[in-house]
Image (cartoon, one colour):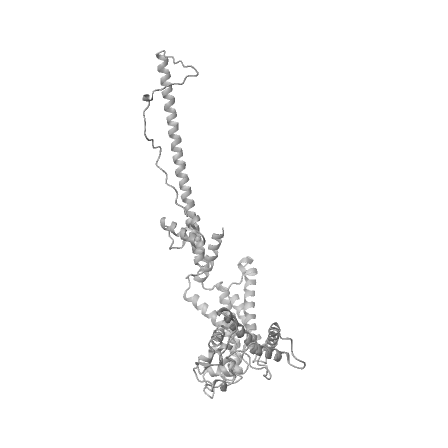
Length: 495
């Protein structure tokens, strides 16, 4: 069942309760009418009785008739003087109200079954959205107007200052990328991210029981060695000989060749698959290659514990590789950026004097240090551009357009901010692409080494979103509407 089903069930229960409340109020109205009818009849009978008594008294006085009775005697009246009525109907019978038998409901599902049966007996619209029947006509009109005004996909209405601000923010991010990121392992930001990665590996190893390096040993290499021994996996092949020379592989590229070494959902899937099936999956020449390994036993007594053990092995092994291996000299070969391994499936094109495909170029770029550590450095100018653009948009909305602070929240759903982010990241990519083209001298490997793939990925997502809005301008943003309606429904149910 979807996440919306519980809300639908609760709304149905509320709809039935409202129907019962309306039926109860209508029943009270009928009872009040019947009582008023009885009172009116009683008043009419009282008037008739008073007239009859007055007439009888007048007739007795005219005929000089005197009635005398002792105080202790009872007045004996012959029943023949009265009209016998077998049955007198004062009003139509009032039927009993239908109800939900809560006594028969042992749990929520039983109660829901009773509610559904009640709704069927009274022909309530259970198949439709019950929330529509919980709102009045004016409330529905107001809600539809608000949804149309606030959640329609609108085009941006930016002025020249918005474009200038966005381009400037992108230019600042581009300059940071050119002067502070540079080639893998050389730029100040890459060296900073390398140091942070080393500290993260040591911290993770300490959490797992590492007590520190021996005297004279490098702490990072010691921590890596500890994690390598603790989190062994069956897919950690290092050379082509480890896979019977099915394809070429070395210590510099085995982390990108093995899909389980990818720090993303793809890597998690293949890591768990490899550990459960005692296999290893690699990519070479645009093809997925499966290799049988020695039988690998996971810890745990059931499926859940084995899955957790497989996840822990995957995560721990990634930490052991993200800063290079324990025996590496220099910077070492880390793990690829998220989803970078999938570039090996793009085995097309001919680049360079050796006419290499794009997949081969991507592997060689990784071998030269374009790994997760460098990716974290690449993300810094992207983050600066993002935050700076959002900050300047907020400042402009507050102090130039005189908007209240509540209207200055930098949400990407705002059309103008969305366009400014596109311009800002586009300017960043323009600076990055120009610098990479000029410094690479036409060499594809050098061009990719100097390119900021994180910036291009962010620009691509923004461009796709802008194209979607341009194509569907005026249509409703269904996801945003669903989120808003769900929040409103929960508020209605809690009220």
